[in-house]
Length: 368
Image (cartoon, rainbow, N blue to C red; front, side, top):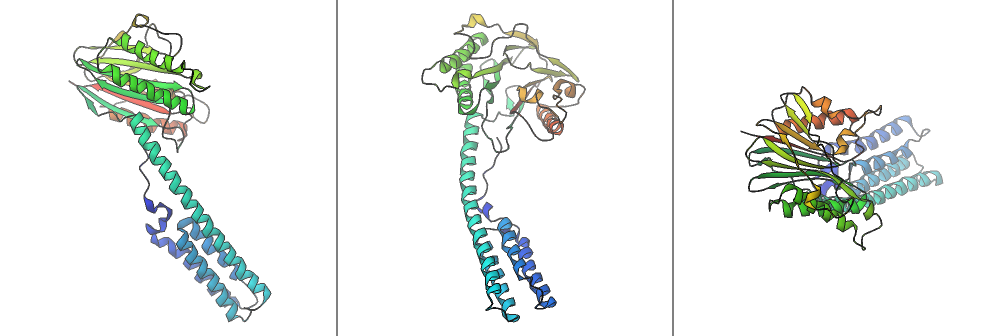
């Protein structure tokens, strides 16, 4: 959920850093001064082409054209001072500076048009991501929650990782999932599953019935004859938790997803189910009889971390996977946001800032 919309003035950064204008102006003045000091035997005027070239990197088309005109004017002035303005060699040099200046101005115009289109695309993608993956509230009933989504690609905003939380009469239901597919098909499956979860979870059906509904939603969507050729290759690993407002247990159904981690007094315990289910969308049409929820202890102050495999499959420069459970063992964290921040910092340090897959994290803590 990153990516604030870039300002309209982004194509002319010199407006925000006016001191940079001194660089090309200083170059023009320095080249003229040195050329005048060395006399007519040494021609430094052609170096003036550097000024508009540099300006194109720090300013917009108008500023680049202005500096280019100054560079051409400076070359004309030097030629007139040394009395060689009418020579073919000097006119060629003036024409070359003019041609390069026009080229960098044209380049800057095309670049700014591209940036405007890219900015619009980023804005649309950002809106779509916020609709698809709504930010989780920091508090739901007795639960404190923190979440994080990191796209593997710097310019990407929409991926196949997903999470959602729904409030019910007796508690809170939370889902995390990872669509195994690529492109728009993966995004479509993520949107479909999130919509099905949000529509059904608040009605408080038994957890096995809810997961069966989610599975059948994905399964029958992939079976649609109008689906693209890549649709049948998609499935979704998911973990669905039910956390009641009262009591010391949660219910979990795991559909091929990495096991959640329980952090209690510096100890990390995987919430590994005895009978994991197939990922959503694989197999056939299921009923609630095909799913069994398993209970796990959950006391006040306990932290539960759910995550996608982009975390534990992140590698360092030597190809070593990120040891999530080991890194959490013994760590002193007081809340879900602190836990998320710690993992985020440590994960980027482990990978050198380069992730090979999308990452989603959700930390949940029950408060007294």
